[in-house]
Length: 180
Image (cartoon, rainbow, N blue to C red; front, side, top):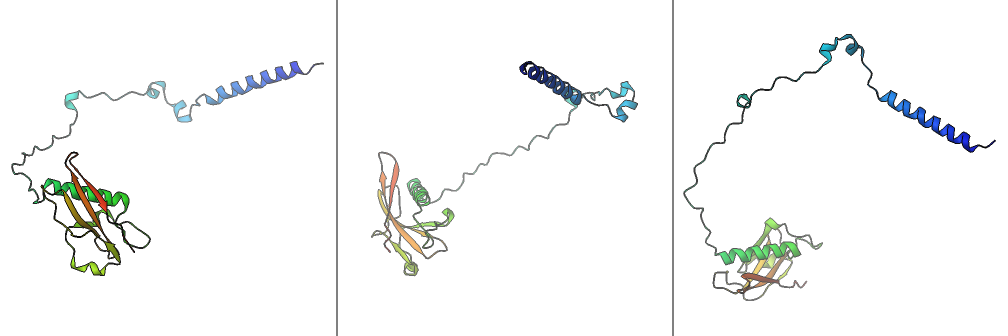
């Protein structure tokens, strides 16, 4: 007697049994409370919808009149603001100013840019800059030397030189190497 037909029949019966059990177990079972309620209350009805005009609405925002006065412009020229932004972005991106010997970068909000040497530079542990510092950037300046300091830290200061590229309308900034 060959076993192959018996195995095929057994597999077919097992598959039929599993399928029928699956469908029997999946069918919802009525609970006692549902079985005791009349059929009319088992049907779920939606509450009637209110017309669109009766629905509550969010109050309209108060209309504010436009400000007539212009915001105060700083005394700094557009080119000077552009230079400070460029220096800050490069200093943060390349960690040009650090606060300790493990080279922890200065937080961006603490980086200060100056164009003349502060009197307290002797209290810093390291730093260097290009001479002469300045001039403070204006609309006609194309070369500027400055310092980057970290507020609250006397570990390092770092000089930079910047050149205005009129053909591109932007500043090129180069840090001074720090010699320990």
